[in-house]
Image 1 (cartoon, rainbow, N blue to C red):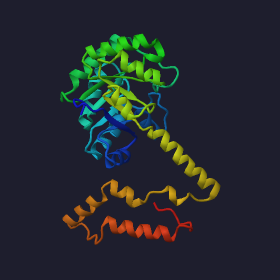
Image 2 (cartoon, rainbow, N blue to C red):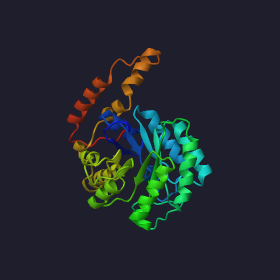
Image 3 (tube, one colour):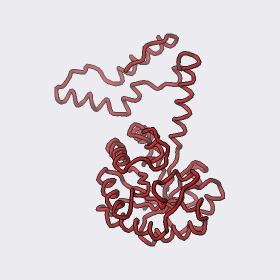
Image 4 (cartoon, helix red, strand yellow):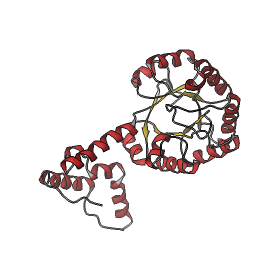
Length: 299
């Protein structure tokens, strides 16, 4: 995909369900967000998760879909030796790419105040370790640079070029906050394969500017707003408007319930006697009949 003339668009996913939804609507890749992975475990994005926790989520996501998964691997969780193991673990989990950032560990979200960066040469050694560790030459190593908010733009450009010279497949400047930043990133690193994180421009615009990967969709913030609104409605009105809902059958279908029923029939586990479409129709009829009635929640 990276060798083509089209930018790879990878929406943020927090978990395997989100990845299945992204694949179901036609996306060709997904991005496992570190901030989202931390949020699902009750932490802000300040480097509190371990490599083991991150890899476990990556494996669930990679196992759930048939499209490439790009992953946040923070700082590599230590020195170049730790990076070596990190790459091996992510690759074994089945993901297609990861990015390693040049922050001091414990790191912070690229948009948070107070982050610090390691010397460029230290991160160069991590990139070299990552390249040595991968067993599949198509496993993509992305060098993330967080220097823009710390040491300025000129240092960011120098670092990105050093990381590519060390062998990184792409660079990823985080902390891009404006249209001017997007244009400068594209102009000053025009000859370098680039990844962009954010929603400041359309995928079409970023493609025209020559970016190779765009991770976007802000799933975390979307989920926060929608779930919070539903909980506030439940608190104030006593129920949540059913028009907000998909159905259990929508979700079950995306997660492969049809295939489970087929396996049950194939192996004689259970005579299901119906299909997901029939169950969905029955559920729709029930929801229409009960639209104005509060019903107990299912497990």
